[in-house]
Length: 416
Image (cartoon, rainbow, N blue to C red; front, side, top):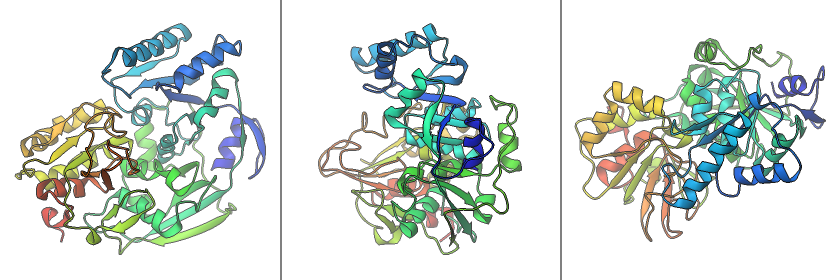
């Protein structure tokens, strides 16, 4: 799939791994953050580029530091808004986390080539989009019509079996890291396939694809199926033919993993590679919970948490922060009564923002521990470098909030 998409984007009949190509991104996506987008604006001007090449391809999101807490933060936002107005580039603000909102707005077009500063944009691969984070290399897209890129080899992962109750998409991804290793797909594209993926929701596929970087991969893709095409109908920004791998496609390697015996997982500090069975850490005292992020704040996550918390109360003193990934998701959660259930249980609900995930707000003090559906558990990610973060699925966060210690959600779901 990657080779076909990059061949089209570079105007070639075909490409192969290792080829150096000049590919034209269909969309250039970014967010404003100190030292990132503001630098792109300045350096583009210094390079003599007054207009981005093809403004219809660009989109910016204000999803960090929302709402602004200092005049300096608001000044950054004001600069981004002004740049967008001057360039004729849309700036989406207070709609949610950009990776999710970009899908909702149709930038997740099957067969498209998307580039971002941030690597979690790989979640657009759930829609058959080749999307990767170029870090500050995305400046090239701000000043040039094309980007230099080396075509990566592709690893195919086939997931077989059936998921047990209480096991969610992020458990599946963390299991891949445990089985394959955090550098197993370094600088490669990954294609996911198999009956587990076929049965997985769009939201679950986004969760898995969005974590590609923790396998070392630059992106992860899933071939579009009927469910995908129905989701993007009426949304897709471009009229592109979906891309599928050939039946005789050549991969660097093919890995088959049976997840039938998979149990809920916890990823222990200080690394996203430290995957353990949840049962090894049940009973460990925790003080806070975060349910949100671009990885796991979607409807199925909120539904899972609400199922656990319905008619129950969070342990006094425990802080549970629930942050839906987008305003659209938050509105639907409200319509379904999920927000009411979570609030009645004692959760604190916030509008969509990236700020909880990287510790700008709801920070922890020395010695505290959190269960989190965020993206990272490195020291200092959510406050003090002497605090700890245990990554897990949304149901585990909810069950742990009830007990004040890491807890198995399956008794609460009636699935023990």
